[in-house]
Image (cartoon, rainbow, N blue to C red; front, side, top):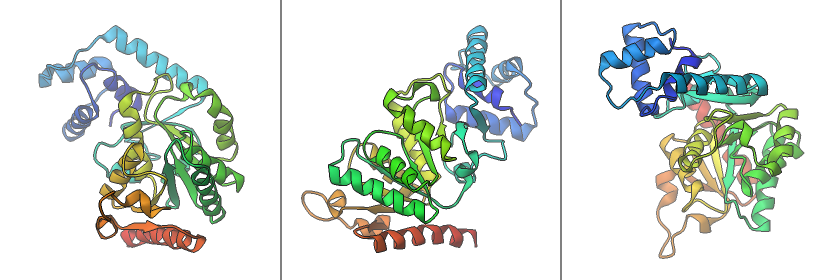
Length: 299
């Protein structure tokens, strides 16, 4: 078993991505190799002849020290793939996060009543209100609301949940130190209501282009169902739908227009098990179907 600190050091090696590190960790486990520090990692990399790895020991240790210091100062918990707290729902997906940086209630990541509400950053007034109302209603039924902490529909979902004093999980595409100024109040409200704020990136790392898409796979994976508000055919929301389909999660839309092409309606309902929510009755039905699917899988 490799410590979280040493996994973080591996992530700082130039030329190493998640897939390479995952293969390396699998090899370490299978061969029962003991990794105590960076020197052990270097020996292993050299013995395996991984030429693309460019290891600058001084730089790696300096960057690692900054990450450890940021976590300690900000009281950010690191959850690695070997930890008991690591979400089961993430263990079984391809390209799973190796380390999660968590502020708040870590236990929410392992709950099985999580419903994601996501959508466009620029919703209509109606879309914003629908996102908030649905989140509020689900929170009243003891669901935890998962969203991406972005402006627009995500923000509305988090706030709607908090209006019912519910718990919500915010999955961020950047480190905890780079929260937009406008979201700091929301960040604190989530924590005060025993919610959870999680990122795959270290606290001192800014978002990159790929971070937003990769964030969406986590949203889909830790949720039992995904509700789309004014979006889905393109943009970031479409990636969340693709991940949800890949992970066999139920998907619902609040408007049929979001899943119909300009030419004709495609057979999306049968292929992707998509639901339409036009009422609280529809919402309740989707919620029960999503949670029932989890029970059926367990059985």
